[in-house]
Structures are given as C-alpha cells and as structure tokens.
Image (cartoon, rainbow, N blue to C red):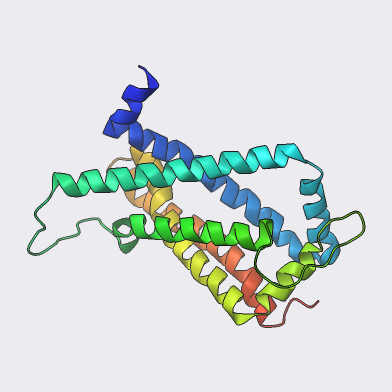
Length: 223
C-alpha cells in the first residue's frame, strides 16, 4: 500500500504514532543514561560530552532525525485528537471515564508541553542561547558539568526541568501501554499489566531525570 494511503487512514496514523513513539522513548532512555554520568563528577559527564562532540556530523544527523520523529509524533497526535473530537461533536452531559486515566485524557496537552520543553531544552543546552555563562575546556569543548550545575543552582531552571519531567511521567505512563494496544498486543488479560508496567517505567525515568536538577539545587552535587 502506498505511503500516502497509509498516512490518510486512522490506523496508519496510529502506527506512525507508535513508531515515532518507540524512537522517542529509546532516546529518553539513552539520554537519561548519559545524563546520569554527572554523578561520576566533572570527568564523567565531560567525557560523555566529548565523545558525543567527536561524532561531528553524525550527531547532527541523529539530532535532526529525532526532531523529525518528534514533529511527526506531535502532528499525528494533534490530527488524531481532532478527528476523535469531530467524530463526537456533542459532549456528554456527564462523562464516565471507563478504564480512563488522567494521563490518557490529557495526552494531547502533555505532548504539547513536552514539545515546548524540547525547544527550551535545545536553546538551553544545545545551542546555549540561554542560561549561565559557558566555560570552555581545552580542545574547544564546553565544560558540561559546570554548565549543568550552574543552571540548576538557579531555581527557575531547576523548577522548569522538574515540572517538565513530571509531565513526561504522565505522558509515558499512558503512551507506553498505548504502543502495545496500537499493535494489537493488548487484551483483557494483559491490559492491566501493561498499565502497571507503563507506570513503573514512567516513575523510574522521571525520577532519574528529576534527581539531577533536584540534587544540584539542594547542594548535594558539588561544583
């Protein structure tokens, strides 16, 4: 079937949502593992950053691919949400959310918040257009450890990242289980287990990310 016919169908768009979701989820996991190297001290996180810097054009190809996947994920998410609302133009007088969760009902909003946060994050740590003054190491590499610590010593930056990671928890706690449902792998038996597993994974990821700005702001990661 031609790609344009797949995209035009609701099932096809859901599959694209699932595929881009898997890509983004993989990045969230890998990015957390890299960020946790800050607990190894300046040498750990700066060595990780130096290895990424040495990838050169490959790193930017990877980044552009992720931005493309995120853009498609948001686009299909908005499209499917609007289609769902048009299919039910008259709101129920009294809504009954059977097997529905707050995370599931607010996916479109959490997704848009995360998309906004990604732009902020790129301006902060990738393009360094905002944030504290940058210190350079030998070889023209940014002192990433100092950049992160100096940023999260400021309440505004620390709070922004903590709030964003709470939103990430809500998004993943529903989105991860939805991946399996889209692929037809959920049934009456596995559905509750998938929901629990999604929440556990979301808690682990969000806690890992939140720990960095929280511990730095509290002074438990020393310059």
